[in-house]
Every structure is written in C-alpha cells, then in structure tokens.
Amino acid sequence: MIAAAPPADPDGPTRGAERPPTESSAAAERSESRAEPSLLRAAPADTCYGAVMGEVRPFDGAPDTLERLGYAVRRQALAGEALTAVQAAFDEALAVGIPAGVADALWLPLQRRLLSDRRVLRPARGAIMEWLSPLVGPLVPHCGDICRIAAPGHATLPHQDAYYGGHAAALTVWVAIEDIPLERGPLVLWPGSHRRGRFVHGPGSSGILSLPTDVCWHGGDLAAGDAIVFLADTVHATLPNRGLTVRRSVDYRFWPA
Ligand SMILES: O=C(O)CCC(=O)C(=O)O
Image 1 (cartoon, rainbow, N blue to C red):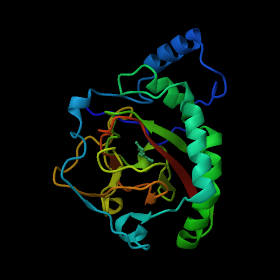
Image 2 (cartoon, rainbow, N blue to C red):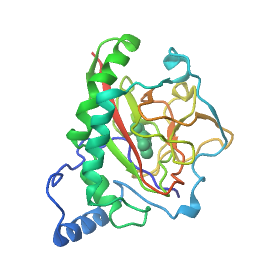
Image 3 (spheres, rainbow, N blue to C red):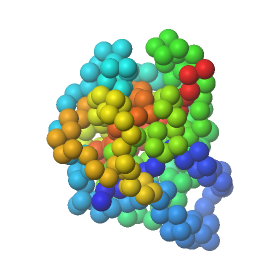
C-alpha cells in the first residue's frame, strides 16, 4: 500500500504550532502518531506507483470544465504577495527541519502540527475565492483546510472527498505552493468520475478499495500558485513524491453560499 493522507480532517491539531519542540514533546508526538495511524500513513518508497494505475494525460486547461470533467485548473491562481506570504509561513514552520522521507521521524509530527496552521492558510484564501466565485457563484469557506508537506516517498491514495464527510456540493481547491513537476507527486484526477456515484472506500485513509486498472488520469507539471478546483465526488490522488525534499501544497474547502 502506498502512503495516504486523509483529504479532510477538520479536527487536525494545531496545538503546539508555535512552541519549539522539546525532546519530551517530540517523544509524545511520536507516540501520538503511533496511536492514530490513520491520520497519515506511510509506506516504503519501493511500493510507490501502485495506487495510481493507468496513464496520466495532460489537464484540460479550459476554464469551464468543472461540471463536465469534475475539475478545473487555474494557472497562477495565487501570485505575488499572497503566494510569497504562504511560502514564508511554510518556511517558518519548516525551520525545525525538513523531513527527508516517509520514514523520517520528523515528518508525521510536523505534518500534524502544520495540518490546519492558519498562518499558512489565511493569506491565500481571499485570492482563491476571488478566482472561484465568478466561476461557481458565491462561496463560503468550509472546514477541513489543510497545509501539506508530502515527504519523499509519500503518495495519497485515490479517494473521493465526499466519502470523508464532505457534502457532495462542497468544492476542494488544491494549490501548489512551489513548482511540483510530475516526479514530485502532484494531484491527479479521474475526469468524469464525479458522475460514477460513490465508490467503496477502505478503512482509515486507505482510499478506494477497487478501481478499474485502465483509468485515464489527468495531471501534469504544476508551477507555484497553480490551483485545481474539484467536486467532492471527483476521484483524485497524488503521484508519489519521488523528489528529494517535501512537496508543499495547501487545500481549501468551500460551500456554495
Ligand atoms: O495533497 C495531497 O496529498 C492530497 C490532497 C487531497 O486529497 C485533497 O485535497 O483532497
């Protein structure tokens, strides 16, 4: 099995986000993450590529594909000061160290601490809503926004956000906070999957139990600030991060107002 992160955890801990880790707090976080393995799960890097089977074809870049394909891409949805502010907040959070891989003891505690870090999430939300509202109508922020650091070797398994408590009408917006070429594990989506009903998901964050092996995914290299909006029933996943360092992204959830 490949590593998977749950797509939405509104209760993601922010506790301790501003306190420097001590040896005892690091030990406590290590045992906490052992106690709740479903928050994030890692698998050996050599099992990567098992989750996203089939081929990955380039995104359809038209602005109006949300209804038809279940997703739409907006290049440079985040730019300038908003992007710089998010990048700076990530840098600050990662000042304690950058996890080298899924087996690095630093990764899960750091990801847990960052999960819903408002310093990272807040600067970009307005810019994202400015782009999205003309496309889909008025929106209100929904719970479950997440700051992600995907360690080398990590991939998120195919799933539908609606399964994890999201309402079918909710929208997710996933934003690359740095350049994320295919080998660094960007988001990929199964176009049209939002019309195939709800798939059976496994326990925890194990994702969809059974997918056709010939799914044609849509994906591609992303640049810092590129955003993808998708419906709660659109099946999505990430490719494994085969890079040498963490990949940074944020994802937001919205309701139609
Ligand atoms: O970034 C990831 O690893 C997964 C993102 C995801 O599944 C989501 O935003 O719903």
